[in-house]
Structure formats: structure tokens, C-alpha cells
Length: 520
Image (cartoon, rainbow, N blue to C red; front, side):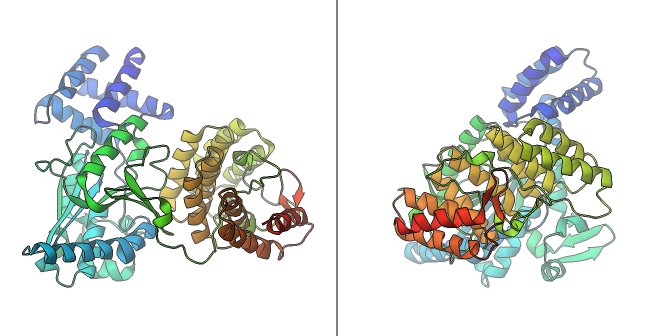
């Protein structure tokens, strides 16, 4: 079986785009063996041939095609919840959807059509929480909703979750970020769970969809002329080549001025040049424009109050990713709210985390600070086995991989952390470190600004942004960032340590910032 495992993994990637990580290969092997037993196949080569032949054919209801659907159900994560990522849904509610609505009203008047149209697509919709969240937003934003030609589409490769989505009944866990007002207004409780109001349920259309294989953008396809595509927490399971292929399809599927939103780290390293990258405080969005414009045309940022990555002063270059997470109880260090974003890596003192697990995590933090990154990862992974509070461990593992230069792995663990808490600033801190190290300054700036949106008192983000703007000769912005950093630094004890790993005191950083300001 093991001789065929890599062949199966490559076939799965070709068919579905799914990337099987090394740590998940044992699970995939077990799934394959289970399916062979159920199908009464005696060898792995028989099962591989069965899958390979069906992979070359069109979608249908043959036994082989159904087998692929079963595999997709076993290989994909179906967990979701309503209004997942408050920042992105706030962006949709307050800016993007009102903008799209205004454009489509104006278009209807210009063309003299009977009704304005709006087409929204949740690609990888799992149990339906995301497209239903979009439908609720439309219900609240469109007082004349019956006069619109609306499509809210939800697609997924997993047909089991689509059946659940069509029913529209959910447990309490699906509402963990939903306001009580919305839950009571659009759902009513019954014995089997919370049932969605039919007026919302009827706004959404569900269907099977395979992003890798389906023809998208073609007028005859199920997805074309879209105003908005949400594809979040899907690409983290895809191979880079599959992501690039689907991105091209998405671009061709969007209408002019239409938007694509993904989870925060999923497009890292992809060619986004066809899109106009729009940087909002809440999230990055990708807009289809016939003539893409630079980020500088994005809406103005809120007043300076951002935070993110450790500073890399231009006069004393340091390898940014080698800035590790702060060690707990380090004497005379600055408060974490100043040194790093508000979300720290310290474990909570609660009944869900045992003292042994807390000890493991403390050891992982120490190893990280001492530069033993592999050992830190191993300790953090052991901690994950003993706790349900996974955010700090995912963040620490991400930092360790970043310090090792393993940026794809770091991105992956950052996404796992953000999937738990989309408003956790520290994963963005790490992503900004990586972007700065790779010279992707526009990406780094976008992540810095996101951190500052989440943590208005992050000194390191102001410092790093000031350094970038200075390198770009944008001295007005550079001065503004550095002055904000200086204002916060001067509130700290001068003898406290700003960079614990290098023993650099606050007063030394203040002196260097003043020198930079005087040189402008």
C-alpha cells in the first residue's frame, strides 16, 4: 500500500486540488484501505486504477464518480459557523455590499432593465452558514429586496454537507459569533436545533461544485458574472498550482468591479496582478478591474493606530523572522501589548488546559527563545494533544517555522490560528515578518496595517512601517509612524528591555528613532 500512497496523493491533488500534508498521510492511507475493504478490492493498484479512470471522465452518477464524492467527503473539513470572521463580514456589510448595490442600481437605470441584479457566491460553503450569512446581510441591506434579481450560490465538493445546508437546521455551535438579535430574528428553536426562516433559506441555491475541474466563468456554467466570491478556508488545503488555476477562473467569473475575498493568508505567493488589491482595515479584498490599479488608490486608512511585526532598523539589519515570541515572565521586559499584538501566546489558566500541558507550552516558549526551533515545534505539538485551546500553539509553531525559513508551513499554521480567532493579531505579526523578509513590502504593509487595526499600540508595527515608508521615500508617512512609535516608547521605563533576545533597552531604541527623525 505504501508504495502506492504517493501516487494516490498526486491523483487526489489532480482531481480535487487538495494538498495532503505529510502529517495527514497516515489518515489518507487509512481512508484508502477502508474504501478498498468496502469495495472488496484486494490490491491498492485495483483501487488506484478505478479512481484514475473515473478522474478522466466528466461528472456523472457512475459508481466511480460516486466514489470520488465519497472520498471528497472523507478528506474535507466541513466545520463552519455563521458570520465567520467578524472583520470581513463588517467589511461586507458596511462597504463592499453597499457599494455593489449602488453600482447595480445605477447600471439598471442606465440600461433600462426591469430589475437590478446581484450575484454572490460562497465557494466551499460547507454546511451553508456562509451563504446564509450573506443572505441575511442582503435581507437587511435591501428594503426593496423583492424587486431584485438575486442569486446567492453555495457550492461544495462534499455532497453530504450540501444536503444539510439545504435543510437549514443548526446547533448552538454554529452561532458562536452570531449576535443574539440576529439569531432570534432569523431562526426559531425546535427539538432538532435552530431552524432558519424560510424567507432566508429560499434566497440561497446550493449545488455540487469542484473548483479544480469545473468550467467557471462560461455563461453556460453555474458560476458566471459574479459580483462577489467568498472562498475562505479552502485554498489552505490546495496545492499552489491548483490555487493559481482557480484564481484565474475566479477572475473570469467576476463582473467588472466584482470582489473576491479569501481567508487572510491563502493567496500568499500567488500572482495577483490581474486584480486590484484593495486594502481595508478589516481585510484585504481583490477586485476585478480591466486596468488594475496599485494599492495606493485604496480607501484611506484610519488614524495611525496599528501594530504588528518586530522592527528591523535599517542601520543595523536583522533577520526579521528570527524575532521569536516573548518568553513569559521575562524580567524587565516591556508589556506584551507594547512589544507584540494584544493576543499573546500564553496559555489560559482554565480547566481545559492541564498543568502538564501548561508546562509543555512553557518549555516550547523557552526553546523558541533559545533558538531550538525543531524542539519548540515538537513541544507545542505535544501541548496540542492535551488541550482544546489551540490558538497559542498554532501561533508558536508558525513563528518557529518562520524562523527556520519554512514560510509555507508558517503560513499554514497562521491560518489555523486565524481560523480560531480571526481577530488575533499575532499571526498577522508573523505573516508581516515573512513578507518583509521576502521583500514583499506591499504585502507586509497590508499585514502591518491589519495588526494596527487590531492593536493600536503596537510599537513594533509603527517602527516597521516607518522604516518601510522611509525606504520608499514617503517621508510624511514615515515620520507619522515613527512619531507614534516614539510617543509610545517614551511611556516605557528607559531601562526596560525592548528586544529580549538581544538585550536592547528601550532607551537605545528611542535614541535610534530620534536619529531617524532628525535625518528626515
